[in-house]
Length: 65
Image 1 (cartoon, one colour):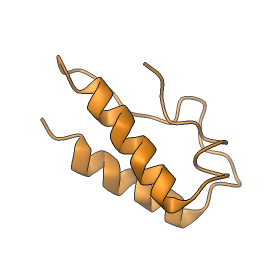
Image 2 (cartoon, rainbow, N blue to C red):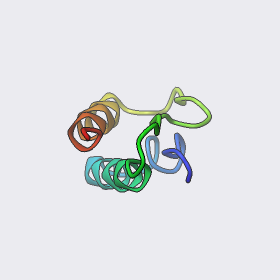
Image 3 (cartoon, one colour):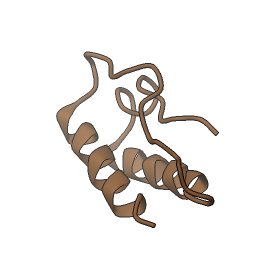
Image 4 (tube, rainbow, N blue to C red):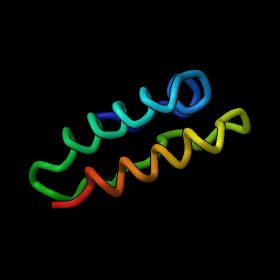
């Protein structure tokens, strides 16, 4: 299990990819409970606000048990 990539995904991809990757990670981590979603190594200065918002919205949507 890994976290969302702060460079490859949050800084260098589309809002749709951010949503898809966040959903994929959340759905993989949910079984059994206890998964804590994060960016792994932090958020880079190059991460765009729309991507950050998409990540948070997708995490909230797919993080419900």
